[in-house]
Image 1 (cartoon, helix red, strand yellow):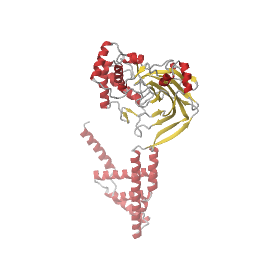
Image 2: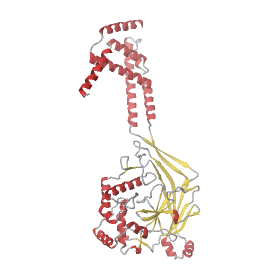
Image 3: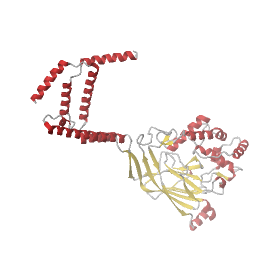
Image 4: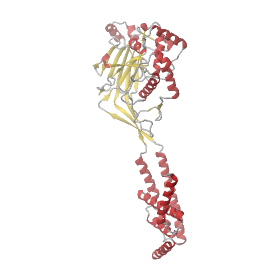
Amino acid sequence: MPDPLLRQAVWHKMHNVLRKHSAPCTEERRKYNHDFAVSTSFHGLHNLVDGNSTGTWGQIRRVVWFVVVLVSLFAAFSQVCSRIVNYFNWPTMTSVTVQYVEKIEFPSVTFCNLNRFQTPAVNNLSIAFVMWNIVSTVLYFSNAGKDHEDIQEINKFLQLHQNFSIKDFTKNYGFYLNNSTLLKCDFFGIPCYREDFEHVFTEYGNCFTFNHNTPNSKSINTVGKGLSVLFDIKQTEFTDDPTLGFVDAGITFVIHSPKIPPRFNGLGLHSPVGMHSHASIRLYKAIMQEYPWGECNPDLTLVHHEIYSTYGCVQECKANYIQEKCGCLPFLLPGVGKECDLPQFYSCVYPTLLRIEKLELCSVGTYNSTCPVPCEETDYPATLSYSTFPSDKAADFLSKKLSKNITYIRNNLVYIDIKYSELNYKVTEQQKAMTSSALLSDVGGQLGLFCGASMITVIEIMEFVLTNILWACAFVLLKIPNVSRCADSQARYKQEIQNC
């Protein structure tokens, strides 16, 4: 049915209904209003129409009560509005609790050597460093300089090595873990071995994770004990180029949840050679509210990681864009697909990363970003302390045991202890400062305080307002007051007043 005809039919129907229920006269409306005022549970209204108060005193009393009711209404309205506005500002509060436990889960620890490649790996080692810097930009948006001379050198190198793979090159000639580099490993009094570490790639090349995400997670029940490892970084085999910024010797490690990938990017802890590093850790859990109270999104999940994390989300986001644009996948990113070779990094991957950064296609932080903060996050803050290692007597002992001179031991050995300081963990939880039930209670309390109103009162007022609106519509639309009914009603009303 066309809209004009539909509107005409509806109007005709309304007109017929209103004609059957014509508007009451003025006296009837006054009586209805009077009855509502004396019978409603809204406090104070009956004092405005009290028939017992006559004369000057009665007028003054009604004026006073009118002012009281008006002020109470204004106060209640302003308080209710402020509560509603406050609720829709989504306020939160933060609670901090400490949970004491008998056993606590031990985190994963990923160890990397600050040196990346072996000296005899390639004739021009600077090429390997430049290539690795280019490849590692997929993890973090960093300036891997595309210097023209470096490109020419790398192109010449690739022409001579057609099947060159930076992934295989790094795995074969980077930091390795065996009995000669892992001199000691002890977890809570139980020896551990190379097989207890999982190989991972990071911006430091080859890295190894202890207590990787496995079905049998490790836990401890005593403080002061944990993981103890002794590394030989073999500076005679590994090298760094000071002109490229690699000037340190030692081990960098990051402590993280077994369910999320390791993230360095300036967050790694460093243990130099000739030192015994003592890392005292605690477990912190942060629970965030979902939007709009907080910034997290509980519906977000990751394909290649067990739990959601901002870092894992950014990795998968970049992997999806690169695979869609370039048809390949960098080996440093999670996913399944053809591995990108170095020419593809130059021609496609690197420009795609710049585009992702420029357009903020993989943004982090707020709810509206691609990767908002997780709703639950686990962190392991550590306090580091150092002591000289080894002592003179320990140096003599290790020199005989390892068949190495004392100078070699002081320049190559790194000793790290990681242990819990307390058998408890701290939970920081973001909570709603005002829930919907609290809002209703607050609004009800303000209405009851100033007006004595309740939900029943609200329904009474709604009925009163709707009735008057219906009468007003009937009067405006029909304009046919029922004179005879009005006269009869007026007579009845006067009789009731006299009887009172």
